[in-house]
Length: 219
Ligand SMILES: [Zn+2]
Image (cartoon, rainbow, N blue to C red):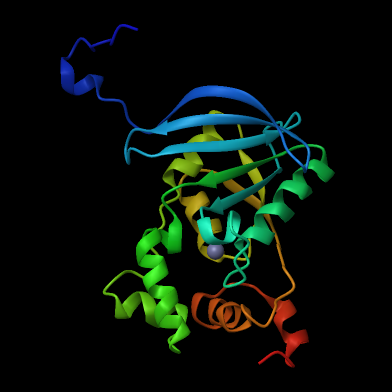
């Protein structure tokens, strides 16, 4: 492959934003997807969007899923990420079309895997998820959604029905030029292990989690 150098020299040849590099069929337990791989030239991350069906451009059912190794792969009950990912994949298949953008580099709301584990250790000692990040000298939420918007633009998506309880995801997409026509709740029944974490998300991070009212009996 030959590198193309722009007429203005090397600097103008620097690629910006996300670039689609591969499209592979991905059959899953939830249904069939196309795994569309991107390189994020701004941050150096490798990213993937799972696309199901013929998505069109308007009111596309979309989940922006922040990577969570412990939740997504290990079934951690500290958070509800694994269940949210499965629910989102099931929802787009049930809908007949949609996109799950899986955002790497988003561990622990962007602080990284090991820092997230440190924050989890502090939470086991009684700090909440916000206090734990701050105690480590780290931001409460460092996630960036520019790459997610770039992938959606590349897929021809103009407006989305966003499966999320997090108002910041909606705001970030709008800021990056993707219209959010609707916010679709993705409510996972809480368990004893994650109820405190979920309440913190609702009370301190403004997540819309109305179903927590029904589980006052959980400690
Ligand atoms: Zn998680």
